[in-house]
Structures are given as structure tokens and as C-alpha cells.
Length: 175
Image (cartoon, rainbow, N blue to C red):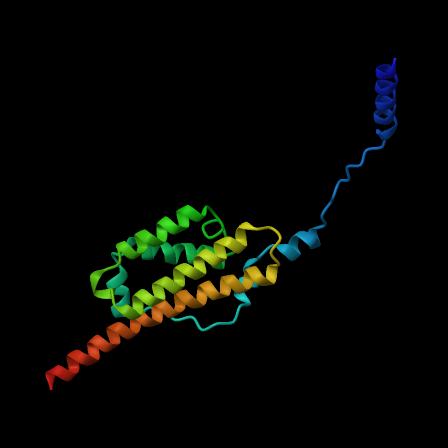
């Protein structure tokens, strides 16, 4: 008898605690809210930094460096707000940078250039981390894009400096 009463009390509690109203709410985002989180091409174009291009000697040196050419293409896509490469799988990005370093032409493997490569990879990994999370403010993600672009520009500058130094050194030995 006691068991029946306890079972009835438990069932009563369960039945009365159930609410017939649905507690799920549909969250509708406005176009403005989506735009406030999404990085656009205009946002990237508005970033202010000094962008260095490769000199003709540097261009020749990296022509056969396929991974570097792919990195430049992906950076062009990034500038057009296509974040898929940098916001994709972390393992793919890590593998890409390992291959980029391994395939680097021997004449570019100086301490200065290798240091810029490490910085570039670090900034790319940071960008990847921030792009993969939805709760990161747009301003922080844009700052990470800028840091990556600055790191790539610094790498290009260091490659240019290497060839300028080599050219000046050759001129000095001719005297």
C-alpha cells in the first residue's frame, strides 16, 4: 500500500511539473547582426599596414617555390574575404606550413628569413584559431588578419633585403 502511494505521489509530481508551453525560442538574426560579425572585403581593405612586394630578383628566386606561390594565392583570397583556407582545419594549416618550410629554396634559408617564417606561421595559426570560433568579436578577428598580412609583408621585405645584400656584396668584391 505504501509503495502505491509513493508511486502515485511521484507520478503526480512528474505530471504537474510538466509544462505544456514550449520553452524553445527561435532566435532570428537580422541582416545587420550577421553583417556585424562577418568580415567583408571592405573590412580587410580598410586595414592600414605597409605592404611590401617582392623585387624582381626575389620573384625569380621564389618562382619555383610552389608552396609559397600557393600561400600568395590564399592570401589574395583572404584579402577578398574568402577565409576558408585560414579558417579551416588546423592540421591542414600546420602541414601546409611544414611543407612550405621544407620546400624553401636553399639560398633563402637564412636565420632572418627563417625567423620571419616562424612569425608568419604563428600569425596564421592565431588567425585560424580566431576564425574557427564564433564568439570572437569581429575586431579581434580583423586584428588577426592584419597581423598575418603584416607578417607576410615582413617576410617579403626580408627576402628582398637578402637579395639586395647579396647584390651589394658582389659589387663590393668586384672592386
